[in-house]
Image (cartoon, rainbow, N blue to C red; front, side, top):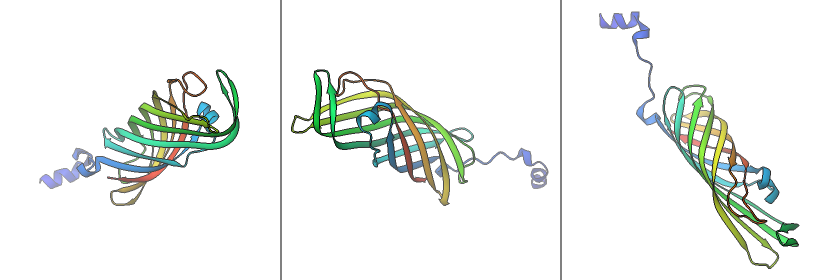
Length: 201
């Protein structure tokens, strides 16, 4: 009798929730970053040295919340002229920009766990930026600061086997000006990142 009642009333059956072992996902990524704004003025070359990790929990419906950490290193050697408050200098230059980010994240997915799906999200947190600059044999100049930052993103997740997805993310990081960097005064360091990796549920 009970079985017949359930079959006759499918809407009475609650929607299936993700299994406990699918509520959390761990994502490790390789990151390629492309400078924008003042970041591009300081180091115009893309960064191919980057990595990240994220932990996300299913929240409500097709949403998830969590946090992520990433590191990116922009580097360039060249012969250029650099303007300082006291004048300009020309010579062989080495420029390095190490950026580390830590952010809380939220995402909305277009489909269910275990299926091919796109997502859109936003991260909010901070950047630690370490800038170094050396001109010829002059002393190495180092500056660093913390910056509040946000990072809108879009991406995709494609299952490859049970409990494992390939994930790609395109993200644009925007920071507030802070610090006292090479050339004088606060700076902001925007950049775009494409990350790809494997998420395990």
